[in-house]
Picture 1: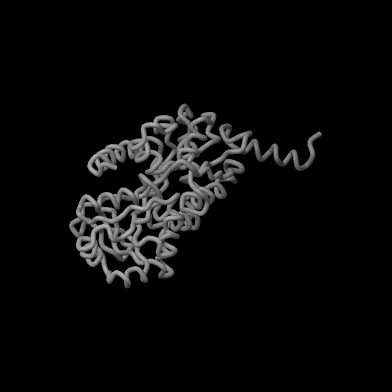
Picture 2: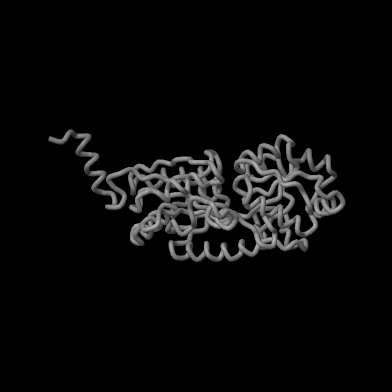
Length: 313
């Protein structure tokens, strides 16, 4: 005879979609805990549990995201293992490194979740020390003093690294200093180990709002109205770099499972409260389904193949 608790668990399991039971689902984040991707994954896991059962979030940082990607590549294609794929892991790193233990083709798309602008930031103390008060001042300083500013990034191949390399080709030369993730890079900026950083808006937002850093410019071609700073493109420096991420599953996961996952995520984000929180954590929600996300990745591959070839990274 079933106990009252066992009977309740049986009813709960019966209410879940067939692909979401009986095993526990997980979202692998190939980066350390505490960043925007981690926070957004935990929010989704918490909100989806009423429909899909308990979902755990596993942080698997290391090897520029390759460790976490490899873990899900090798998982069963049954919809129970998802990984947060981003610009670096799905586009830049595969273009830069031939010896990666995975390729983008090892995964199927579920959905794009976010696309957010990157921002050029400095601390007020460093700005005062260097006599920089605006993006125009920054450009003038770097032209007159090449390689005098250290530029922190979340690692080789990160959006921040590419933005910095792009400026170098425009005659604005700074010294690239890669760190193990954006959080470590931002700490180096705040402690004055480095001078500038191209960070994504979501990651930089708390430090912007409490005055620890100031935004000098945006790297997206179109200005984000939330950010009181000009785009580099408007200052004559052609630049169109943003940070995005979405969910992937192992190759061979049925289309029906991927479409159902996307549907449940969309329903979850229909809540104004949840969407508000997600927007704040991610820096900007952008929902695209499996097919559209696949096309998005392909377009980004074309764009960054051209970028990386020109930048010689």
